[in-house]
Image 1 (cartoon, rainbow, N blue to C red):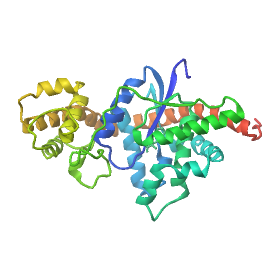
Image 2 (spheres, rainbow, N blue to C red):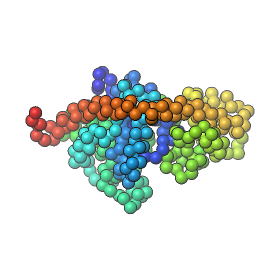
Image 3 (spheres, rainbow, N blue to C red):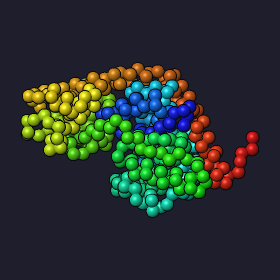
Image 4 (tube, protein in one colour):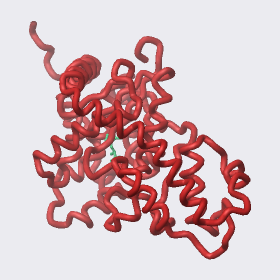
Length: 334
Ligand code: TRP
C-alpha cells in the first residue's frame, strides 16, 4: 500500500514497434487505473538485452516508449514512469531471488523454450533467468496487482511462488501479487491471419497496425484485412477475421459486439472495413500528435525521467534494505 492505495506494477519492452494490439490491449486501459492504484510503469530495458540489441537503437526506442506512455494519457505526476536501468534495485533484488528459484522452475517456462528456439545462437543465462528479473520488478514495489497478457501469466505464477517461498522462510517480506483482470483488454489478432495474435515481430507488414502508422497506411491495411466469403458481419468464432475487426471497432468506440453488429446490419465488408479503419485512425491520431509534441519537449521528458526514477528508487530501496537484512547482509554504517 502506498498512501492508502494498492500498488500496481507493469512493464513493457522497448523492442520492436508497438502495435494497435499493445495499445488496445494494454496501454489504453492503463490510463484508467491511476485513480484506483498507485501505478508503476517501467520501460524494462534490462530485459531487452537478453537478446542482442543495437545500443543506439535501444536507447532511442526506450525513450520513444517512455514518451509514448505519456502520449497515450498516463499522467507522469500520477503514474511512475521510469527506466528499469535507472533503478539498480531491480538487478540487486534479482540476484537475491535467483538464489531462491530452482533451475527446474525456470526450465518449465514456455517463453524461455520459445525464445531459445528463436535465438539459438545466443541462449544466454539472462534469457534463462529473465523470469526472476521480472519477479524482482514486481516484488521490489510490493505490487498487489500486475496487468499482464496471457503469455506472461506463467511468469507471474512463478513470481508468486518465489514470494511465498521467501515469506515462508523470513516472515512477511513481500506482497504476493495477483494478476490484474480488469475490463478485458481486447485481444487483437493479425489482420492477415486472424487466428494469430497481432505481433510487433510479424514479417508481413500488412498483418499489424503500428501505433505510428499514418492514416493512409492504416486505412490501406484494413482494406486488405483477411475476412471470409460469408457476407455476414456476425460476431462468431467461425468468422475470425470479421470477429477481430468487430473487436477492434468495439475497443475503439467503447461499444459491445451486439451494438456493432446491429450498426453494420446489411452493410458490405468494404464499408465495414473502412469504418473500422477510420475508427482506428481517430483513436491513434491524437496519441501520435501528442507523441510528436512531447518528443520535441526534451526538458519536460528529461524531468519526468529524473523525478520518476528518484521516486521509483525510493520505494525500491525500502524493499531492498528489508530483504538484505533478512538474508543476513550486514547493515550499512552511516
Ligand atoms: N516480461 C514482460 C513482457 O515481455 C515485460 C515485463 C518485465 C513485465 N517485467 C515485468 C510485465 C513486470 C509485468 C510486470 O511482456
